[in-house]
Length: 250
Length: 250
DNA sequence: CCCCAAGCTGTGATTTCTCTGAGAAACCCC
DNA sequence: GGGGTTTCTCAGAGAAATCACAGCTTGGGG
Image (cartoon, rainbow over all chains, first blue to last red; front, side):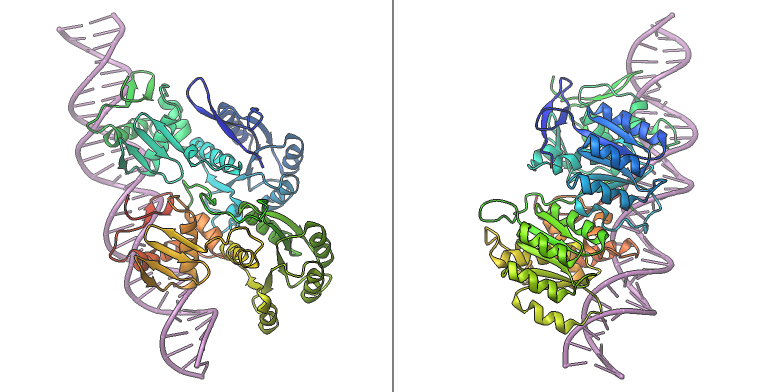
C-alpha cells in the first residue's frame, strides 16, 4: 500500500508523490499501441512515471519489476483475459489499484465485481481527463490517509469537489452537467494557464470525438453563465490562444 | 451506462481495529480462485488484512500461523468437507467467528446448527455488500474489534441500523425490502459521494447478476418513495454520473 | 477607422438518460 | 398449495444534455 502525499508544483498544480518524494508509477496495459501512446503521454504530463505493456504476460512481468502504484488495464487483451491478468497482478501486488478499460457495449461482459476492491473503470472511448481523474482518485485513496480535502479543487472562491461533483462559487451551489463539470475540472486543474481549444478538446472530449471544434466555445459559454454570471469573471479568453481560469481578484 | 464516477471507498467511516490498533485479519477459504480474488479485493478495501486458502488443509495451516479474527469458509472444498475444516479450525482458534459460504440449494438445516454459535452464512452467489456487512457484524460481536463500534449509520435525519435492519427518517420507522436495504446501506456508507450505477451494481447485486442495469434506477425509485416521500429529498441524481445521498439541509 | 478572423450565443434537432407503471416470475411463509 | 411479497424485465414518457448551425459581436492588425 502506497501512502501518497501532495505537493505543489511551480505551476501551482498539486502533484501526487510517494512518501519518499519519488514520482508515482503507473503501468498502462493495452494492445492498441495508439492507446498506450495516448495514455502514456497524458499521464507523463501529470508528472507520473509510466511503463506500458501490450499483452497480459508483458503486464505481469512489467508489474513485477516496475512495481507500479496503479495499473490501467484493458480488459480485452490478445493473449489472456482480463480477469486472469488481474489475478496474476494481484498475486505480486495485492493492493495495487486498477483502472479497467472496457468497451462501451460490454455491459454484461463480466464487469460485475470489478470495482469491488475500490478499483474503477472507464469505457472506451474515454476522455483523458476522465482517466486522469479516476487514476488520481484511485492513487489517492490507496494511500493510508484519506484526506478528503484532496478531492476538492479550489481557485479563488470557486470550489469543485471531485467526489461529490459539487461546485460552488462564493458559497453558492452551482449545478453543472457532466460535460461542463469535466471542462471546469480541467480548467481548475490548470489555473492561470492558457489552454488551447485543441488541448481542451483532446482532454475533455473522448479521443474519437469527431464533431465541430466550436463545442469548446459553446461549453465555455455555458460555464460562464453558471460560474461568472453577474460576478467578477474568472474564465478569460486569450484571443487566438485559448482560455484560462484564475481567481477574480488580482 | 458508465460515465463519470468515483470509486467506492470507506470514507470517513469508522474502521474496525483490534485492541492493539492493528488491522483486523480475515482468512478467506474457497477453491474457486475468482471468488477468493473477489473477496480479498473487497475485504482488503475495508482496511482488513487478508490471507486466502484454496482447500481445507491450506486453511487449517493458514489459520494456525495467520491467526485470523474471522474466517470466510466455503462449505464445498475439494479435499475435505466443511465440517471437518471447521472442526480443525476450532481446535486452534476456538472462538474465531466463521462466515460460511454455501450453495443456494444446500441443506440449510445443517448450516442452521452451525450458525448457532454466533457464526453466520451467506449463499452463493452473494453480493459483496452482504458479505462485508455480515463479516463486520461477526467481528464486532466476537469482541475482537476494539470499539464496540456502533452499527448505526446516520446521514441527516436518516438512520440505518446494520444489526436490526431498522431504518428511520425523522424518527419514523420505514420498512425496506432486502435489496432496498442493501442499496441504502451502500449509499449511506458513502455519503456525499457520487456512486455510478455500475459501482452500485457491483456491490449491491450478486457477482453473477447478469440483468439489466436499470434495476438500479428502479430501486432508487423505490427508495425515494420510502425515504424521500414528501420530504426534502436526500437521494440525488447526477445525470450521466450516478447517485449520491446527503443530508437534506445544506 | 475598417475589416476580417476569432469568438460568442440563440435556436432547435437529435440523442441520451432517467423515471416509473405494468406485469411476469420467483420466493416465502403459513 | 395459495396468497402476499419481492425481484426484475420491458417499454414508453418525459426531461435533460449534447451538438450543429448560423448569425451576431468583438478585437486588433493594417
